[in-house]
Image (cartoon, rainbow, N blue to C red; front, side, top):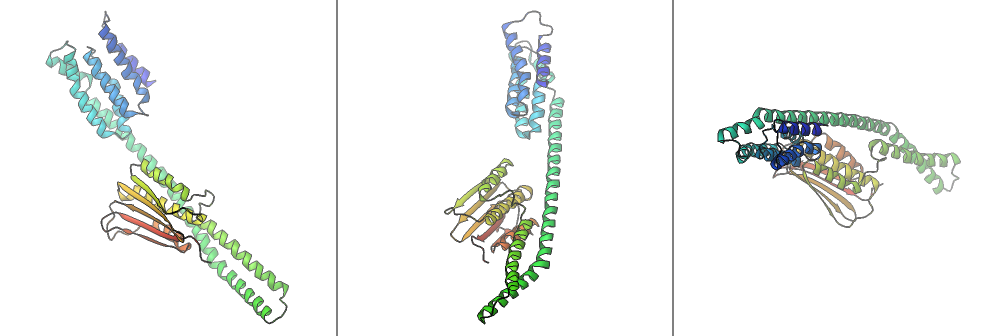
Length: 358
């Protein structure tokens, strides 16, 4: 509707006061209509629309149509809103310089009149206002998106903290006592069999119940500590994380070395979380331009390393997000190193054994 309204306004304004329509006038009318209708694509392709509307404005000025560049102002607003500020400034300078030349080329004005017509066609104040409006809306949308992400991250963090709290309570209150029951029952069974005495049925039931309770408790603790069990995120999804990082403007790369083997689900989920947390920290806090993710497969160890060229320097204190990484890696019997690099940037490196020790 906006594109049609702008196109109609331009064409009607251009044809007003013209009693005879020449071939050049038809070309000018076509440029007026195209300059308005192309605004349909201003959100999907703001930069091409900016170029087309600018060329159309210069073209119909050269054809003798003294019509304000309304379509170009809409295109400036859309381009700045999309974040293309530098391109918009350069394009606007070119259009401002080309409009007087186009008015002179029409042959209907002298130099002074040509500059006056160009100034009237694209008032600098309106141009700045269109750019400022686009920038203001872009900043507002970005703040709204950031606020939404922050709320979601806060909710997830609180849920993770509650799960971890429950897991610790269960571990502290149950694991120790169940382990004692299981060990004492197994020792009693072993001693009875070694002496050749019959093993009471109740003792065998206690032994099996202790083993089953240990397995169930371990599964419960793992489920509470890892909220990704249902989504099954793992190594196969790391490439998606890197691709998502690229969409934010970060030059992220993924390198996989070694022969791919069957990776335990908990190891794959841990690697996924390490890469996810690292790339998130880089995008939000590091002010980095490049990041590299490297995964090395070996028969016994799976290693992952994430480097960036951000602003971290020696002495920087790691954020609290790294505590969750370290807990995941330590629970699998691995080790994690997270520290600033001597030449600038930050490194997160983890080595996780492929087989967990009982």
